[in-house]
Length: 108
Image (cartoon, rainbow, N blue to C red; front, side, top):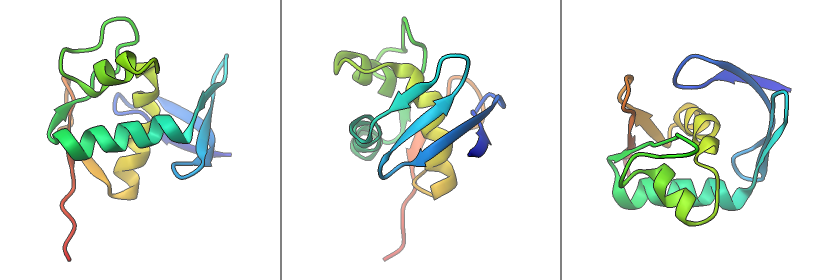
């Protein structure tokens, strides 16, 4: 089991990978499919820089969370996927709320 922190500094434990899907261990475990992770990556790539919008009930307008909710996914998954994408070097966050996610530009 691996461990890291959300952008708000909350420690969480997980298994799996960004390539195959994740299980987040909480009081009620959360499964995050490869499809959800790919939807998040695609949205960041297409709209960078973009608001994160991880609020489950009312994500920020024009945010990744709003896009996920429209697709029938929980914006809450962003709290766990974004820190792992940052660790992987895929994107960066601005460091304060509201979180703005920017895709990293990779050198050729």
